[in-house]
Length: 170
Image (cartoon, rainbow, N blue to C red):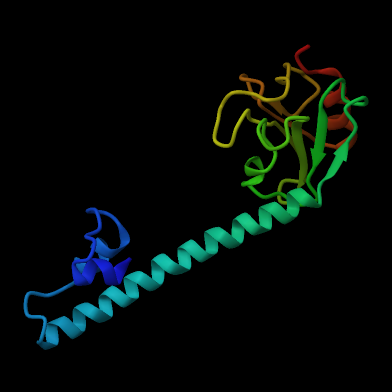
């Protein structure tokens, strides 16, 4: 793609990677300024490539975490399967959503930094604010239940499990 852009075979759009790299070119392509511009372009490209690799690694980690999650029976939780993550990854909804795992209505995990248990309703699709599972109802015994009903926090696993069984919209 970069070579095609540089050689004129196919020009990249304004903010595509080859265009961003070529923006570093200097008017005098045979002078020392071009060498300096090339070094800056390499440094920029290195940052972008590392960022893309890190993002892919994070997706792979989320996939592993979701594959290793414990799925709790839908009979216990009143119709939805609950996925219990053994460690949290913010990209879990890429794998637990209404398109990829429609039977999973909520995800729960322990937050060791805050020493709290948390649960979130799964989305209909990745990135959606529409619920796949049943929304959480207000509950004074919980540490927190979001007003929109998509997120809840409990002090103990038992408290959260009880909440997930009893305090969700029918």
